[in-house]
Image 1 (spheres, helix red, strand yellow):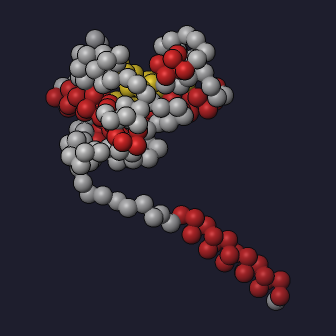
Image 2 (cartoon, one colour; image 1 turned 180 degrees about the vertical axis):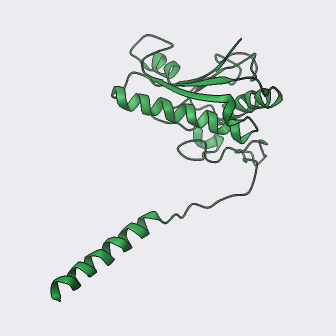
Image 3 (spheres, one colour; image 1 turned 90 degrees about the vertical axis):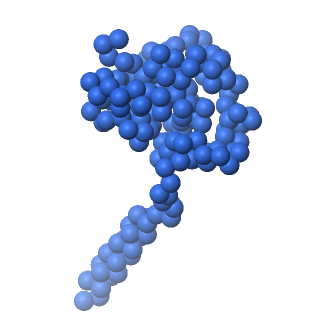
Length: 192
């Protein structure tokens, strides 16, 4: 009897531990807009798009760029399918930066208005980290972009996600200037 009581006590303790580990304290929001650092809505839902929800001021810089690039600078002109097709990420992060939210929304709108269009979102990482880790990080980045596109009206069936990790660098080099160009997700329109 003593042995079975100890087994029951252990089972109860394990169950309690497992159940308490599954609880969540995250607050859910019904808002469809994200508020930026100035307190104005961006009109785009960014919840659930990466590691954590950050405002522009937390990303660094007044415009939220955090990495010295401007939204219309080195990334290309405009934010739609004929403009920027590359989304850049901070080191070891799959959080979509605020400056790329309108870019992704433009792609989502393009997909929504053309239901026969199909894209592949390719996730990439810089050379730091193991090959396996970088494949997983690239996948998280591509999925964050794809998830944001579907939240903005694109269909899941229009979006395919693939990760290349560090295998297809945009820039060769072993310094920060090359690494920041390699930390990206690319939106590749099929048939164009």
